[in-house]
Length: 614
Image (cartoon, rainbow, N blue to C red; front, side):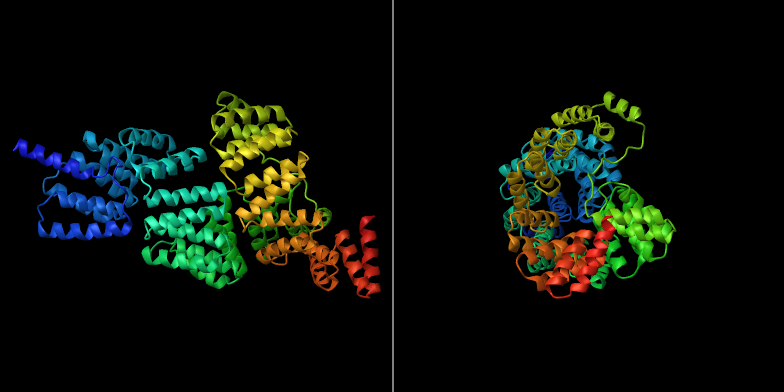
């Protein structure tokens, strides 16, 4: 009997470890579905057979069917399988059902067969990462990799873990190794696409999504990520086609509804956007992007109270999210709550880099509350259309306490970053740079570490160091946050051509970037390429509507410079309606009116501009 049980244990070990060494290529979802059907028939034909049940459980795990896998593992145990070998598979089944605690309890409930230690560590690592316990996840992934060094699928999860830790370089190395081990691993190819999207831009990622879907056409995650990329590129028909395929494969996945809601909101169909958001059944309610879109949609549809609720939820998680603050202020103002609007706007308008829209609303709110002097100050700042320099966010603790904590633990970002902000706020730039440099040296694969050093160097006038740091950050993340910083640093360092080249590169790689189009338009204006400037500004206007005074003003300037006064006049008129106290707008408006023959109106505007300038 003991000999028979040993033979049975060996059989289960071989079965449970099929493909564990990473040598066998990853099968597509369709292939696993076919295997599941065949194994279900085998189990039905011989209910006492252990091996088909174990193989069925593994197939169900690969298909994300945690409930089915749990049933198959328990059925195998019921007919005599060794739980030492199957405990990690049962834990994986629980984890797939969202019950991470039960998964960890299962792993701790008894011994694990030596051949399954890697599998157990892998499950534990995934659960710890889901729970946000990154230190425990790191230790578990390290053990899993030691046990299964050539498992391509494991290396994809390692890449995800490193990416979650902002270790872009480490994530890139891990996913590249996963592809090297198995070039047909659709999950690895899809994750590579996601990394390329961040590091090189939207267009560059499409080829990798194509490779991922060629390897596994039924990969719903890859289809959804591809759809989001196509949408950002403005290829909306292709986006919808990808979303329809994904919805057919994963009908309960809420993400296709969310992405379609984004598209509907961009098209101005907010009623449809609301309907699509409701179809997510609350599964994305805790996602910042979902909260922000919900707030925008509700505000557009007149649901001020609901919009305010969504904005408040988002601010509870992201107190420095100024877009959410503007929405909350607008919702409170529309709902008659001037005090609430003032409170929401205060952190925005108290900064020297406050935008004109927020300042105008703050002026109206202050006037409503009877604060006439404060209202006039806001109006003057808004009319200038010249925001000041951005400043670091304030820290909650005293400078000494923050600095002492960072000195004691200089490589802990939670302590070092507030100290760097405090140093910059007190103009101690040498100290800020030194702290940021230590953090960067310990995290060279992390874009944020390079950005932090660049910000400290730029504030301290070290433009060469800022350019170097931002270049290193852009090599890891080619998005707006790195490229705009690099362009600014290059311009301040006297390299206007390099600054322009950086912006145009961003425009080419991220066609949906409003900031890139805006800055590219200004660059075109500087060299009197009016048609190019108009094209850039028009793309911005189509995205955000006729509510940006600077865009409307510059469109008018560009058309006027081309001699197309009839096209310039509606834009400057719209700019004047939004900002009737800006002297530059009044003078340009007066010039165009005079050319049209309306001399009295032109004279009145010039008189008003002179009075404001006194």
